[in-house]
Image 1 (cartoon, rainbow, N blue to C red):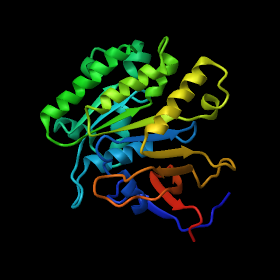
Image 2 (image 1 turned 90 degrees about the vertical axis):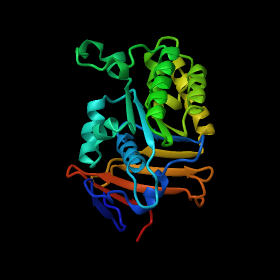
Image 3 (image 1 turned 135 degrees about the horizontal axis):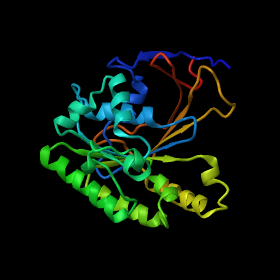
Image 4 (image 1 turned 90 degrees about the horizontal axis):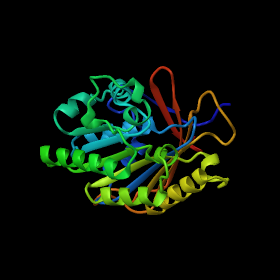
Length: 280
């Protein structure tokens, strides 16, 4: 399946690997705002989160860099550092300069048998208890704030996995924890799953809880970036569709961004192609 349109191609190692139309949507969100990134199986959000990390951590002539705390329940630190390196983003260096922090919500909770003596317990979550998780995140936030005066962006990657993996997890308690954490940082970004089986049938407690949580977060979010597969199926030259919905101005003193939809392709040659529907 081929699509007509002007395709712009950027090497991941290039400083302009993200199309200019998309870059403006990745700038640091406004104070106290909530950004929601949803994904489905086959159209994951890690590539977009990496571009967001890069845009936030790296400075240019017009944008002041911010600090970032990434809490990931789906991917370990090695994944993020390796993927970031291919993007030209040296996360270990930002970690050394106290501009970046990471909490591993995967290894300690779900891969306990693989933990080694070299595992950093300070940055590894080892219990699904929400009070424990909130305390660990607050400690990490406090540490980053003490080490620099930059605005702090909190990214919670796949925290909805706790609804399935933690015993008796209440979606409203999870939501309350996120609300409390949002008060500690400049802005918050959540990546959540929006697969149809989780949000459509509502037959099981997990499906009902996940749907309620996702809908509530979407209602609160001022900015939503939705990743999905093509409605017509898989295409060899398109990885998926990104739909961007803006409920309010994204960023302080910036013009109001418009709703947008892009097709995107991530190739094996480490190049990203982005183009807008209907572009000639």
